[in-house]
Image 1 (cartoon, helix red, strand yellow):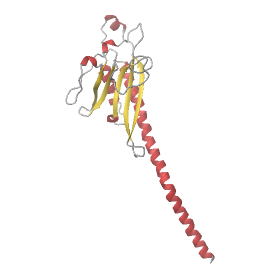
Image 2 (spheres, rainbow, N blue to C red):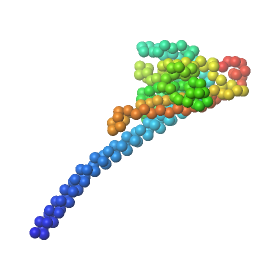
Image 3 (cartoon, rainbow, N blue to C red):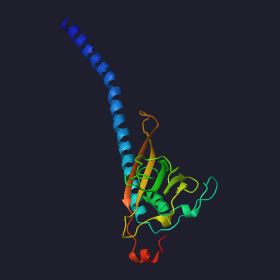
Image 4 (spheres, rainbow, N blue to C red):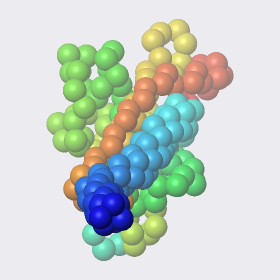
Length: 217
């Protein structure tokens, strides 16, 4: 009799363990997948922040870089070279060269703009970041073009010769807004999440001889 009771108790304990395992395994799996998802999300967020600041640093050195190049070929937007500052293309190229873990084609667009007192495009009264340069002066958008494997001008205008990077006076500031689409690894939180960041820097002052000669690009 005692042996039968022991056997029943053993079988009962095994059943309880199996039930507990069946209940806890999905929770543990969900936690594990969440940790993996969060790791990739943090990686891509760090890339967006780093690339934004890299682009801002490069753009801040390009006050005298002159005009950029209009894209060509199928699907190219209307473009007037004088409206495209070379510093914007240099900033976009710097993002491509950064060699980050996140594929560059996940970057939806870059806005390169003259920053107001609050760090945003447009008049000083603006305190929000637009999703395009439509309606804003001194702002250009660059997007990834698969056909050229490169970031290219998409819209907007900024006449490079209007940039003030000469003393005396207040130096203009350049802003970068970078928006990327993070592809979720597990799909637990949807297919994609949008990541964005913006950075603002003063233009590096131009040499006095360039400012004195009026040869500013």
